[in-house]
Each structure stands twice: as C-alpha cells, then as structure tokens.
Length: 328
Image (cartoon, rainbow, N blue to C red; front, top):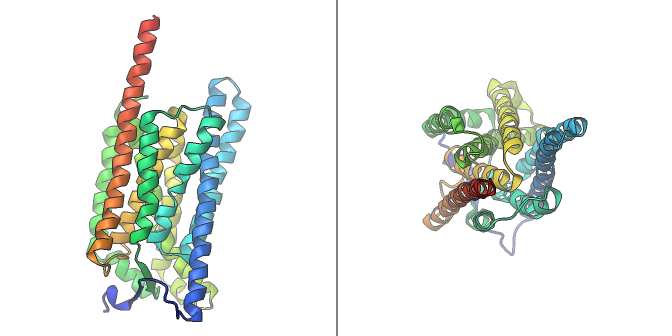
C-alpha cells in the first residue's frame, strides 16, 4: 500500500514559465478563495439575523423574531456550507481555512451598526489578533496536488493520526458539554465554551474537502470513487459537521453578543480547520520547518485571540454588575 506522501506532488509557487495547466489551476484556486469569501459574508449576515431575532423576541416582537431566526438559519445551514463546499472543491483546505476568518471582519464592521453592540478594547484587541494571524497563515501554506480515489480516502481515514485526532476532538467536545457549558448563563467561560464548540464542529471541514474533491472528479467523468461506501461516509461526515454546529452557535447568539460569540466561533473554526488540514489531510507533511513553524504559530495566535476575548467579557460582565449594584 502506498504511503500518503507517495501520491502527492507539492507546488511551492508559480514559476514564470508555468504550463497552461498550472495557470488554469491557479485561476480555479482564486475562484475557490472568492467563493469562500462570499460564504463568510453570507454566514455573518445569517448569524447577525439569529442574534437580532433573539433581541426581537426579548422585546415582545415574537413573529418578527421567528421569521428572522428561520432566515438566519437558512443562510447558515444551506447557503454558507454551499459556498464553503464550492471553495474546497477548487482550493486546498490549508488555504481556504484562513480565508474563513474574514467573517471576523464582516462581524466587527456590521455588529456595531446593525446590532448596536459596543466594540470594547478587549474585543478590538481580540479581533485584531485574529485578523492578523488568520491571513498570515496563508503565507505559510503548502499547496498539495492529490489524486483523490476511494483507496486514498480509506488510507486517510484509517491512519493512526486520524484516530488520535478523533480521540482528542471527542475529549474536547465532552469537556465542553459536561463541564464548561454548565457554568451559569452570562458566564464568559460558558460563552467561550459554546462558541468554541460550535467553531470546532464547523472547523472539521476535512470531510467537506474530501467530498468536494471526489465530487469534482465525478463531474470530470470519473465517478468510480462513489461506488465505495467510504465516499458516502465522508459525505455524511461533511453534512454532520456542517449542520451540528448550528445548534450551538444559535444557542450562543441567543445568550451573548455577536461581537463576542462570533469572534470565539471563527477563531475556533479556523484553528480546528488548520489543525485538521495538518493532522488528517497531511497537507504540511513535506513542508520546510519554517512553514510548519509559522503555520503553527498562527494557530496559537488565534487561540490567544480567543483568550483575550474571553477575559475581556469577564471584566465587562463584572463592570456591568458593579454598575447595577451602585444604581441600587
């Protein structure tokens, strides 16, 4: 059985004498990035509609809130994943993952005006850290060329590193559900947990990458991979990860402000996406040490951004509580 790296051809840049085939691939790569960026805008609007629906229901506008909730969920569950899937079909996961962080840009810009939320110093610093580390990770990308077949997909799924990743992710999920989410409502730890859980589920896009690649191959005339159960299993995984996060992000937006929740959500999404691209898809296996170091540093930077945001929300909650105490 061939190793994972034996079926890969790595490209480290665009040569001046690149072939027409390489130029076509570059155009598809750019199209994939463009579709992913459009998806981030659709996702942002959907999340803000969910948050606004909660505010409407709190004000007694039940019918309007219900309509906005449905509209927001449709944008998140249907339209956003469709853009993401199209992007993953045309570009590597390690490139698309950082681009998804554009949702932080849209959210920071729109929430102040649409939802009338306050951009505190901690929220600004957190967003700034994430906005720097997310696009910076593209500079350390490794662009793989992989011949996706059902046999290769099986190798990816059954390798020991994928099993280790699944065990660690399962432990992380259980920690959040049974420990961190049990803090009282309004707690920044609970808010962090809900947002990070939603982002971690959504960030497992390696199934979507595999499904998109197999679908692209089928559209080119070779549908042999879809005769194997593993291809349908990855499709199920892609749907599961794309939809299961909706429960948590909706719950989070109904309890916490968008500027806090979406920042945590997106940082967790991109960090998980990058990590799964490294561990499961092995996209950085043959990369030089400086690329691996830079890429890993960007992931750690996203985690720092989430930490800053969570600490800031704790201080904000304390200040609000003190203010109410003084008013009484």
